[in-house]
Amino acid sequence: MEPIVFKPKPSWGWVWCVALALAVVVSGVAPLTSAEVRAETPPIVWVMMLGIAALGVWFLVVGAFFPAMRYEIGDQELVLRYGPLLAYHLPYASIAEVRRTDLVPSLWSSMRVPGLALWKVPYGGIGTVRMCSTRMQRGVLLVTTADGTRFGMSPAEEERFVDTLTARIGDAQRARA
Image 1: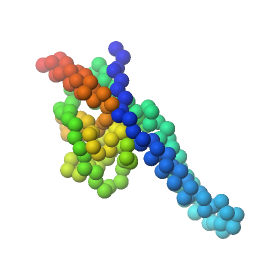
Image 2: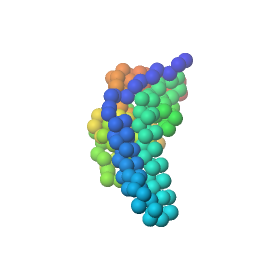
Image 3: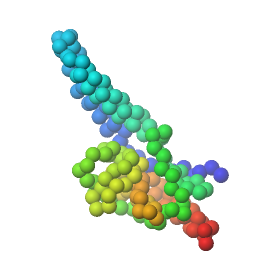
Image 4: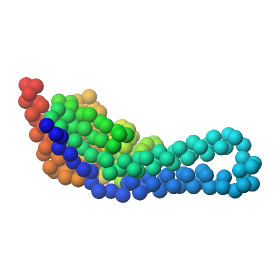
């Protein structure tokens, strides 16, 4: 049976990724456009500039896969996807709680910009949340597994998503009993 696919809430998070990519590339590469600067630049600086350019490319890749974010409710598990860059598999039998909440961002660095939060993101009061969301803080749907692992998401059709997910969780619990 094909999984039921839910898209995330709309967001401009991809714009932040593109803006970061441009800022990183321009700030790292622009100084080297002058012939004088290039002639006097030691090799270690070129290596650093290559690293900065690679970071800019990474932000572009993350932004490019933004339309591929989705949540799949299959027969046996919930899958949170961000193109080929991220896939969290949550078997229904492992899900202990589903609730909507506001998260308190910590100051620690992570992949979190307005309108996009991905991978492991630290939050105050609850610790690390594995995110695949167009919301980084407010109105995040938080799924907690029996072992305490938390996953954050932001389905556009949240009520329908939660109803479908809780029905599948109930089916999995009845099958185990």
